[in-house]
Image (cartoon, rainbow over all chains, first blue to last red; front, side):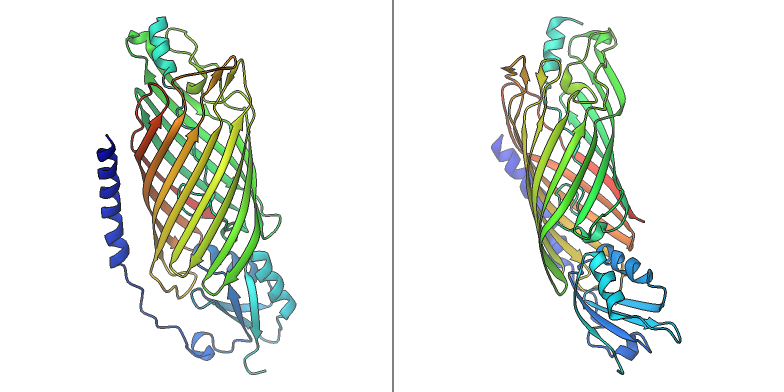
Length: 116
Length: 293
């Protein structure tokens, strides 16, 4: 009976692990790209820790979109970077950004202001 | 129904309660609250064969609100369909019931959070209360009352407390939980207290996620264990109840949209240390979806 159980476990592991080992990372085309390449005219770049999957990062996108003065945003999940562009003639304050990241459950490390 | 047939039915004590994991692995809880720092719904179905009993459990997990970024709340509404033949009882031994099981409400609090680029370390505690909303007066076709373990509800209030730890490093995630649940007695019957423990290793494809709209696939390999003490009738242990069951559970999840997750899992029993004479535990397929809104 015990050997049957071990055999079942071996079959399951044998079917699962090869898929894991064969899977390769997607091309890394975005890492290190210039701000203007990712979001021209970005008014803020946030470094956010804790983002590990799109399903989780979706919450951050929703919180940031609640800021009415944000025109466009791009979240680079694996880089932990969020690019924000304010609407023409509008501003997005650091406090607004901090509050949105906190409400989404992530940790904000830095806010950079390109061109400032 | 004959007493012998009813006795055979009682042997089936311990048909498992629905799993209602709130987290990202299929069956293991998670300390992540970030995915649900918003409203969401999770629905999944599990088919459980045990002896002559087939049970389909389809819990709807509603995450109605997140009052704090480290706290999520949940309501679990389980739909249960159960069908069995009592051995040797003829047509009168058919039990076929379906409906809502016991409603569960709970909350999870991530009390330790250390985020890092592309990953996190978190510890959380999850507390749930199970309310006796499920039917408890189902009968076999011949009118014989079905024993408590075969009813849709426990007939009494239950509670569970679970400690969860999650560690994510890039594409690899490790989650473990241990929890204990108890149910009050009802009409002289008390379900055995259960200690549950799970470990889940996850692997994400692709390794690099460019944007929130990047489609991903997660592969999981879980160990899910439950240790249940004897049920009790009038303060006497039911000999043929309880024990230690362990499953190896490979699973796969697909995130086609940032607010949608589709998942499937297969629980394969590899450890069955059951008390007394009980039917074996079968393979359990499960599938479901989660939606954030």
